[in-house]
Length: 125
Image 1 (tube, rainbow, N blue to C red):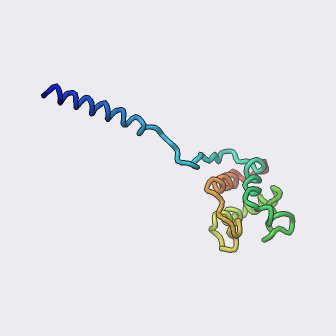
Image 2: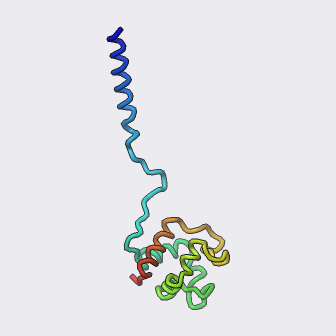
């Protein structure tokens, strides 16, 4: 009888340890890639975000909507430095200024990249 109990205990122990093996594996949820916001570049990062979200469709040239011209660093830097850019993309300003207008809010990663670029001085790099 004691031999049977010992075998059961050993079997349970082995099953417990092997059953927990995969519990320690770190699996990222789908779509949860990391978002690198270090050393943001206007030409390498910010322009791509503006382009991918259709910003240039309305905010191009000296007569861009709301007087905002995002197709060059000078215009983008102006709204970055006066706070309008972050208000627009984080939807913290008046509703009429929420961008992209009529579209979904930028992703948390895109907002984080723009926020980091602004915090680093909205450099023309």
